[in-house]
Amino acid sequence: MNTFNRFIIATLLVFFTSQAFASNPVITELKRIDVKTFRITFDQPVQGWDSFNASAAEPEINYRLYRGTTYYLGAPGVSQSSYALRVMTPINPNGRFAIQWTWEEAPALAAMDVANINSVNVDMSFYMVNSGYEGMNGSAQTISLTDYLSLTITTTNLTTPEEVQTVTTLAANRDGATFSLDGTADNNNLFKIENSVLKFKNANGADYDTTSSKVYTIHLKASKNGETDATKTITITLTDTNDNPPTDITLSNSTLIIVEGVNYFDNDPNYLFLVANLGAIDVDTTNTFTFSLENNTGNFFKIVDGTKLRIIKTADYETNKTLSVDVKVTDGAGHEYTKTVTVVVTDVNDNTPKNLQLSTLIIIDGTPA
Image (tube, rainbow, N blue to C red):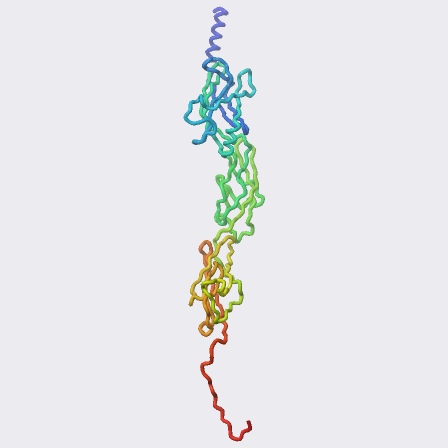
């Protein structure tokens, strides 16, 4: 075999070997890299290609962005040629070839940030080829909109009702973060985290009425593979619930006395005798109270304007030396307390003599006067 034939055979072997191991380009990553920029990465260097003219062309991408039925770029029911058109810029190109390409999309990304969505669907159409002129068309992708951000805990200061174990589900600006308590400082020892859910260790939570502290300070840590941990300190404020009944009814007057025979008028509260303004004692800090009467014998008493205990009828000392009524207070949760209120009726000289009683006196005749 002569030298020329050996050259032809070697050339053919190289050609067939290169064809056997050549492959079409593949997208390995589509990512948002900052507030306004997308980056696409291929598994090999590629260049833009106009398949109709069979020549190198400016690398362009037609694409649309949507989440569910909301389109942030482009529209549904249209052909790929009607998608938004952007020119891509190479990163570290070698001639016309590059593995990574970028383009900007500030308005649409800003709108999605305002909508607070973490990921978006992308339909793409483009034609890129490698050095062997093997190409690829676009594809559909779902990409994260927050991966470019540093990991941050987004859970803020919290309030939680008493006697409830679960406080909240912790959140970060990135999907896939895991949470833990950062150290043992402050009140970390009172809490635990299970599957991103922050809880009191005590299955019954904390009792507002007996605990000395109503505000807890805890330190959190969020972790994500390959990224720097995020830490944050938050406070948890314990709130009272209406879980206790009232323990007493208070009266604004300590001396409960009325004079018999005074006329009081049911049709005008300004002329009704005010026994006392009513109040209630309850350890719960947030509460509403409703007052009512029971055992109101003779209907002497009435509650006016919700809290004013008044007498609405004339009392007669000779008939009733005291007037009593049971006042009941009901709190917002239906808990009740009852107290008997007694008013003393004072006597006045309102009766005429009914009989003249005479005594017999014997005087002996001659007794000096």
